Amino acid sequence: MSDTDIPYSDSMQQWDIACQHFQDEFGFDAHEIITINTIREMFSELVEEYKLSLNASVSLMYGLYFLGYITLIEMMKAKDEEYEIGDLTDFYAILDAADNWASRSLDIEKLVEAAQPIVETTEQVMQKLNLSRA
Image 1 (cartoon, rainbow, N blue to C red):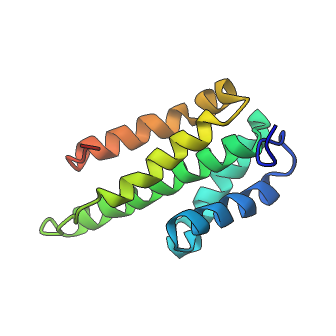
Image 2: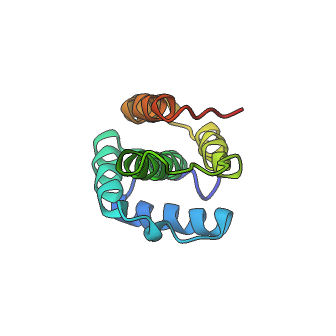
């Protein structure tokens, strides 16, 4: 067992660790997104309900962050139809990293169940914005 595949402990501690991994991996602070408090609350509820391991928690945080980001894009587009969505190719690396963390998780079945609504909502928003991971 790696030091990151520890079982569920404390959701807020796992949030802090996930945010640090995010900053280390992508070079920016997750707290810069304006919906981060909502994302943190969703994260905490899901981690506590499913008792997710740290690897699963990091994967979940990345997925929630991505959803939060594209939701902000959706809001900008709704506010201004002329809003140009830039190239998100590099941003999709967050989803790839979420998949990588999930693959290291010993409780992937619980993660899949916990993340299903997030995955479905992400797909819906991406379709609405005509985005794809090409």
